Amino acid sequence: MNIHENSRYREVHARSLADPEGFWGEAAREIDWIKPADKVFDASLGLYGRWFAGAQVNTCYNALDRHVERGRGDQLALIHDSPLTGTVTKLTYAQLLQEVTTLAAVMQDFGVVKGDRVILYMPMVPEAMVAMLACARIGAVHSVVFGGFASKELATRIDDAKPKLILSASCGIEPGRIVKYKPLLDDAIALSSAPPQACIILARPQQACDLTPGRDHDWASLREAALAAGKTADCVAVEATDPLYILYTSGTTGKPKGVVRDNGGHLVALKWTMENLYGVKPGEVWWCASDIGWVVGHSYIIYGPLIHGATSIMYEGKPVGTPDAGAFWRVIADYGAVALFTAPTAFRAIRKEDPDGTFFGKYDLSKLRTLFLAGERADPPTVEWAEQMLHVPVIDHWWQTETGWCIAGNPVGLGLLPVKHGSPTVPMPGYDIKVVDEGSHPVPVGTMGSIVIKLPLPPGNLPTLWQQDERCRESYFIDYPGYYKTSDAGYMDEDGYVFVMGRTDDIINVAGHRLSTGGMEEILASHPDVAECAVLGINDSIKGEVPCGFLVLKAGVTRDAATIEKEVVKLVRDKLGPVAAFKLAITVGRLPKTRSGKILRGTIKKIADGEEWAMPATIEDPKALDEISDALKSHG
Image (cartoon, rainbow, N blue to C red; front, side, top):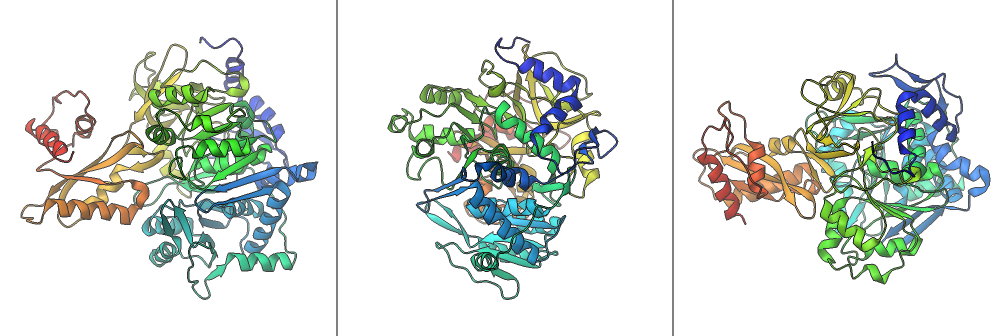
């Protein structure tokens, strides 16, 4: 492997594979344990073994209490910047600890104890961070549901997690509109078969809401009463292998897949990454411009920076339009952020609005050392543009909801490696990545195949799905025995660099949000006039991919096709929420298929994206592809 001579990467990665217990046991010294592990790794537990078996710990203590106890209580923990409301809120570690202990005591008053689930349906506000940490403090298992999801999606998560308590807000705020959360929450609870005992609602000044008597409680009133009574909650010891949170993967149909994150491995992995991968020191300002509803927000708005003792920026706004394409540079300059972590979508949007980079020169970006991109494939033109504008390393890295942290990246803290556009660089410690064929045999260098990770997975990765061990086994561990299936396809080059080229299943990536085309097809097929449909992701200059639905109407339908197309777009929006970004439905006479009846999605996608395509040998009727092409042209 041709690795930069000044980097310690090769020796660090090799040691992590040769002696994983030694490597992660050493990393675990950065964490304050209530009781150390009996075994760093116990291969006899769980689906593939468990990390830090027998240890006891508290995640909130490691994120807050220990910094305050060691004299750093006056350091800023959180900077909340909301151009949408024109407010900035700053909390020190001591102030954040006060808020967390108060809310944790309130939750205990509602009977929440270790192991109970609490759903958070919250906008990007400081109270969301407080709520997550309060759950961690008392050993409750939080499940954050992104505010863009519709009632039905929220209801399926309520039914799966069976929360004792739901914490929500009156609204979320988007540019030019208010998203009323309370009616969505009320509808979800009405749909649910496992409603919570109580809801705590944060009333935001931008939108009032009615509280349901006996069930709903005003957040501010509960907080004030608890503060007046001096109520606090101590940290509760949990097993390192106990769940910290459940995070449901986006766009799932039927019973949702709740990725479980444990306490111990999560603490160790995130602490290691903050300095070694991201190059951030305790006390420095770090900005992850994601949403708390996604895994990136969990790991690097909330837990990672606080465990490390850094200052975390939480931003309620957009990369453009709040107020302009200089929004990100204003935030970096105002607070002296040393690193920014965001999705390539954000940079495509900024580039579209400000291609010449006129806003860069208006702000002091001298403290910014690195830009990190993740959430979808970072296309080389966007990376090159960012490099030219920022004059700092632009680091793509690749990971998943299931892994909780980076699978392949460029470890700044170990010495930067040469950047290869189109690659998230190299496997991180603990990740033994292979590219294999369908028989689990390694493929040659430079050859496309399925990307898999040799077991055991490193700390911080999912131990299972919430109360679905067998489904977890089937989803991730059966197809390639001895490996974790990433469901991504790609290749590795002669230097060991990983190139992730796309998904191997029906998940599309819309602005970093993984959404199931199969789930959208179910919704389209439910329309009374639709006989058959196919949804696929087509390239989009801003979001990376957007879903496009092809409809075949039932025989005898005489209604206007354009009206039906509008109805199915609304149907997807109502059932999945605006996060699906579903805006294009096209009526066709038939779908191109193989002789065995399989829809030729890959070929349709190439036509839609304007790429070269070859006539599939198994096609039933070649003229069907011409009809698809004509339909796309007629829709612009």
